[in-house]
Length: 268
Image 1 (cartoon, rainbow, N blue to C red):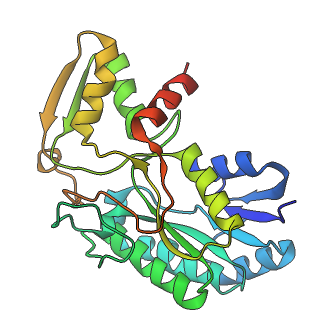
Image 2: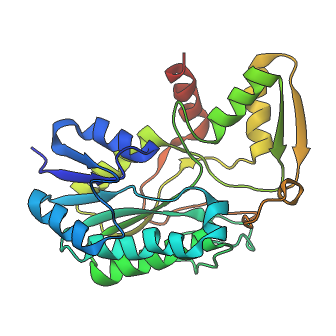
């Protein structure tokens, strides 16, 4: 039987899924019970639970907020990760495709050199380095465009189609989608096998938001799809034009089209 796993950030999309998948093996905590930015709080809580593994899902997912508040992003994504690592317990933490600038139009591998494009990405990259510097047996999972039945890009686009019959979608950003149930099962398997270091985990397939919305709109008859560029949206944080994640570590998730089919069924 798997030993106790502490899931940090258990009320978020990823944290909820880990708690559900792990069942009785999981202890899920979130603010205010556990604040990763408070080193003493982390030490006391982790010490009282004595988990065999910490799954860190605590994050600020608002990229534009991170651009406006880089101090907050660093507190959560770097100092917070370091606090967890210093407990001496093996940690799994999640990072982002935004650490790659997209200058090279081929999938980025785990060993490729990062070139962050925004404050969110910088804070995540520094968190990666803190974690593996303090705890070399820990795991960093880079992923992108995470979604489940009620959150993420597919849900946002499909809700817009169903509610308004019209949607604006970006045409000049290419990345990979990641279905939360697939990611969670792969991470659990990876940890059970004793994995360590950096892994890229995304569903197979490359999309733009525009390509995705056109696929979703096919089943909804007349839909007004407006193609835009990222710069047209006037958002504070830059996004990489191309941040497709590949892998050299042999662990892959199912194809995106198959994941989207399961995702559609989960919403019925």
